[in-house]
Length: 228
Image (cartoon, rainbow, N blue to C red; front, top):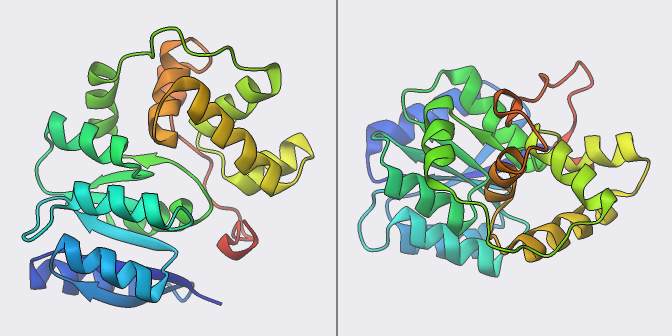
């Protein structure tokens, strides 16, 4: 049962490289490719992938707009944003649109595969350079509704890169309950993505900046995406 990935990038060489890197992992299957954001939205609806690798600069519809539409219509589909140029506006745009990951196109192959697998189980993955941009751009919400003790605990684990399955296991609760907590956290903080919530966790002192989205490697049992 392979993790299903849709690739959206307007450069053929980049798509070919991404497909080749992902195909080296038997747990990942590329189910579709496209060259623009509008088609990415259509294919996401048609193919129902687990993860979309989304270039941010594309014709017809940009990757940020496409990410927002996919996350709105298909909340179970996660998006990992890709870009060749690190720009504050794009970083913030992707995060606000709901991307769970943000990678530069010069990322190592292992990091790419890890980000894709992590996204499928609810793990945040942001390149270090992008993380520093986020810390400088994201501001803590003004007067957010008070989190419960359990919600703060879930937020702390989320910010440290824990998957839904790992949070459920550590807290001895169901994975659907974890998703409900995450939904409540986003609503109370007035943010649109797990990544924004993770940055808030650092700004509020729940998590040291050095621990933001730095999960332990997937273990030998491969924290399987399909059981998340």
